[in-house]
Length: 115
Length: 108
Image (cartoon, rainbow over all chains, first blue to last red):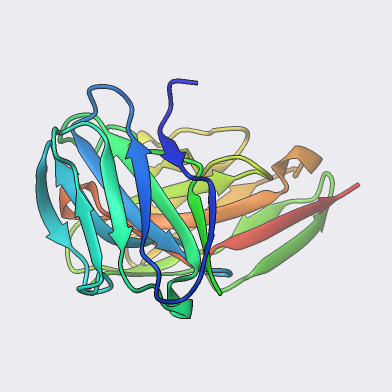
């Protein structure tokens, strides 16, 4: 499968612990996005990268959240001092180029449960 | 700020019946609108986009700027159409704003 891959697929953590998710986009896709999806809701934009530059962060991304894409390839999303409200699916997506005619491809998501 | 609304959480129809999923949006610019679908145990994937004006799997959607709507329609639903459907609006930077989703259940 050469699509967007995410790891881990499921994570259960205790409140207060740190967690990190990894996303490997489709090769040569220069834009990478993180979304969050809670039960019964559509995905919500968190942040995106163009190559290694983080171009925008949503207000949903509190200071406990940090995302990186150090070499313009894979990306990580870290959540520090997790809270129960962080329980959600974290989706990664990538797209080639800069035109709206291109298609965004999503990964399968990483489920986070904070207990 | 942009907003996408899908008023129906669940649509249940019989096989062969028409199905229409409603989507309304608010956006100050010229909208780029999409329908995404998520089948059971599969990832979110693009179904169709308004600029293509194409029919995918028998589905069509027409952008009505006057009513700020982008409803998805299929004249004869099939069981394999059972899935979650999300309407989405694309803003600058290819960022998507999604609606809350509509679950379609096609009964035999």
